Image (cartoon, rainbow, N blue to C red; front, top):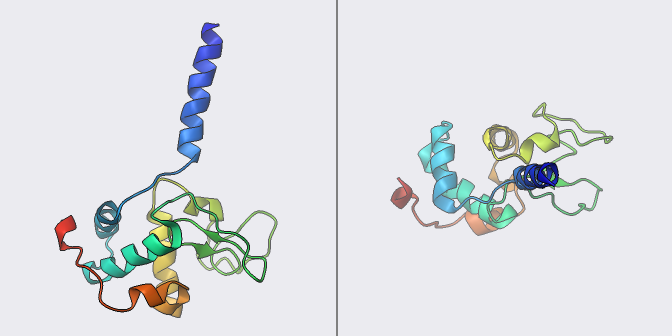
Length: 141
């Protein structure tokens, strides 16, 4: 019985780890700042994350019109940016898509920055929500 309880506790911990985490606007802004993202971009990134994934690191979006999926807090596409199991991908970020679903957002941030550098902010379908006035992130610091 003791072994069963230990096994169940380990399973619960594993399930929690696999579920990812949900950040809030300020925690995302602070983590991105710590990763070297320019402060004048943080309001845009937090807006994108809010509208794409509701700040959830573990989200895999439903299939797009071309059969691709979007992954992680910034909903990064598997046709162009990351490698999903068994699918063709240009894999411009050189990552497994599962690397975009973890609690550590470093891979998601680095890949999102690459998307931005190659395609601009309009690469995100939700950009129209984020292209105008946005509340300051100053209260997060």
